[in-house]
Length: 216
Ligand code: B16
Ligand code: MG
Image (cartoon, rainbow, N blue to C red; front, side):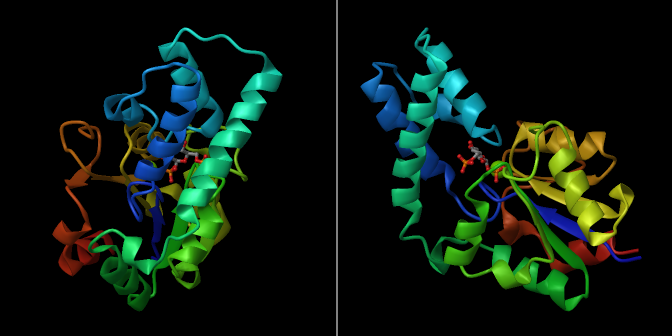
């Protein structure tokens, strides 16, 4: 039967992690908190609010809700300025051919992202038309590893969880897919993503024959 191929956005389709990092780093600097690329790894797949909590904890900074809201707003404004100039050249290597192959095979394609900025990014990199369903940070109340974002995507398409395949770069996202009994495919370091059923360093290692093997 027809399969639902669900893609995470940041770290899978585009490398927006570098822009999140620059925007968080600016805020951290203003607050006198040391924030390194290693720290940034912990923010992958994590919601905006939770990301701020992790950064504040790094610096033992406590804040009022009003301050946190102001900082979240400021961080997002800076992030939006970075993604403003994104174009199709920022789609990660190998992604577009695989999306087009899945499409040509008549299968479903969905987005399952924690980001509230997912839709404008898909528009900027010009691949919105390839998606049959989009579920992002605006649509869900439970963050990965809760599988809500992927389960909703499958539901929108009328696919069972067992017929859903998830591409993820974060540990929390792989766990979410596994909890939902979806096929989990890790994109990135196999040591970090060891809970994934399959792992590829990036999409250039995914052959059409691998996609075919998932269709039965
Ligand atoms: P925003 P994904 C996630 O996207 C990012 O990995 C994570 O670093 C970010 O904090 C989160 O989106 C929220 O993003 O601030 O744009 O709402 O990997 O789930 O596509
Ligand atoms: Mg991601």
